Image 1: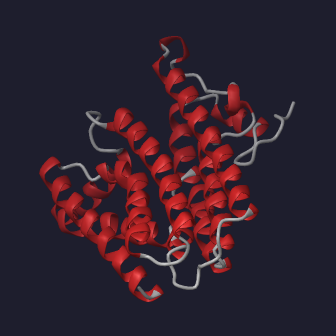
Image 2: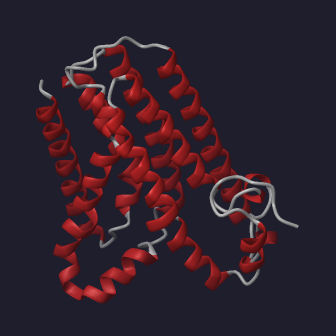
Length: 259
């Protein structure tokens, strides 16, 4: 299968998956279910690429397994956290602004736009399925796996720490500034970014340096667009001590806290 056809097949599968999810969201009146499928959608790309792509089979399998490990962990974490809690305030605000038109507009504003983002970020995974990616696994692949595992561990530990903090009534109204959260205000986002750079390194090993567009886009999303900025705007309104935490704690990359 040619590179162009593989990209087209993956985008078609993502569009079908997210359009189906959109129909479910209409029934539930909850567009935020799209967040739960964000991670698993990458696993779909990984396994479609493994099944119909070319290139080195071992690398395609490796990337499918990495995408599945990350995607399922994140999806299950968000499902446990969000299901039954109602629509996320971000989507609720969009629904209120757009009124009845949101039902149709959410198809392309939320669901198909997310399919497009997954398709772009997953470029390192897809590149391994290109006909030219015939090089066998070598040390650069394993370097990428190592970076991925560090990022995955960082993200998973941060999520566990945050969940315990939220479930502890004694910390109600306080700011989490212990554990990994002592060194960065967003250790889960940093871990997410790091693991995607690991996947990007495997993409380089497949001979596709341009596949780094995926990790770059993910880093920009998390640190500049939909991750850190939106979340901090919301937290500032809910937690009075957050400004002090911001002054002493790194915004993204882990660093020793300021005195």
